[in-house]
Length: 110
Length: 118
Image 1 (cartoon, rainbow over the protein chains, first blue to last red):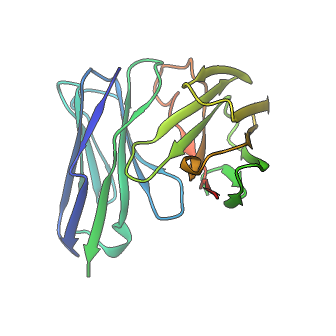
Image 2: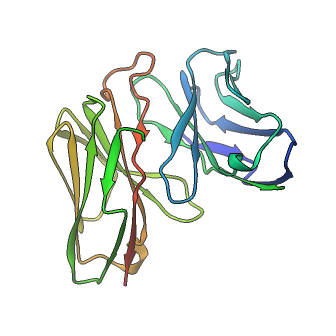
């Protein structure tokens, strides 16, 4: 079946630093989604991508749909304490079920 | 507020108890999902309902019994659970499973029910 490899699994950074994480798939997708989950809450959608090469921003967050359609990247610029959480990528092809990555746990030292 | 409400937020139950989790969505969606989230594991899809019909059961043990009376409500009935079933159970909804166009399958999650089985 389809598999997503998300990396890194965890990150420990200083406030103000930029963050980069990525997901790679064993097969091509036509939709990539990025979610953030805070402690005690469900995942919240951050960015949705629908086209190879697409670059979309949401405030300090920027995500890209890789041109091979097998990967996606999420960058956070100038991190702040409220960026702490677990970031999940998810992808799908057509009407097939959404597949999730294992998550990247982000910790920020003030 | 994502438009998907789950109750209760926390539940502690013994292995012989019977309990139910409830999910309600106010987004006008037609598909609803149950996920299990355990520590250090990816989200595990359990069940999918599309227009009130179950379209997917991901080899879930029969001690978990879903019910979808209408497109806005989803239940997960629990009985004779095991300690390894302790996890965060998340409900999600989307427009419809068969919609393959832009945005059709974006899932919106509730805050989850934290379940502990003693």
